[in-house]
Image (tube, rainbow, N blue to C red; front, side, top):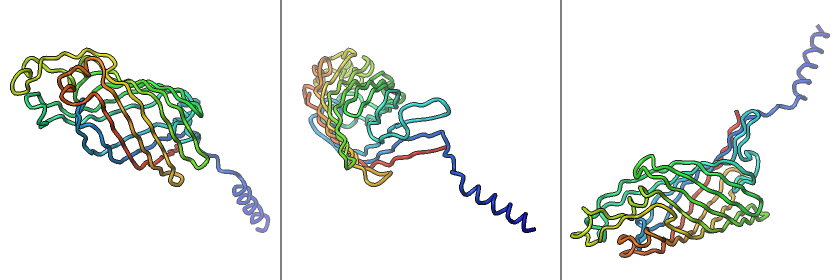
Length: 255
């Protein structure tokens, strides 16, 4: 009996001394919700406030495959690879200065991007498709200089260029023959695809504990090409300023 008891205690002690092996598969991402101030529509001079929502992909490790760095810094994680990209564009309807133009339905763009990020700089390219709404192709090219403070504060700033197919640009900047003339008073306008805006963005992230943080962004864009020459823009503004602030929650799922 005493021998059996000693063996049982020895087995328990061995198990207690054995470290728990962490599961190797990890998915790390973040969800941000907040508010956004932006032009009422592409080319508008007035601004409105709307909810803002975003999902950020940090990294995935599944067996021998790894994308990003699921165990690295949670903001602008160094490395190269794919990232998710999406954008929601609200409905354009009931705008007094655009009376006579057709309603433009809300759009949801989904896609992928590629990036290379170091500790102090980043370059990226995103490509999206309007799965709901305009059904066009659009995307963004950009670069950032990055500052990482010992406190955890992360600042980034750099140029941006947005592009879209003719289906996208005509949805937001085009004026059809049926829409031209009274009551809109706009001339007919066809917008070709390509780069429709260039600008600069300043972003900031301040962590609040291990899994929470505050995200902020201020951005200036200048419409160009057929987008700038559109009657919609001419009665509004080529200069597009937007800002966003949100609360971010980080998730690190191990399976």
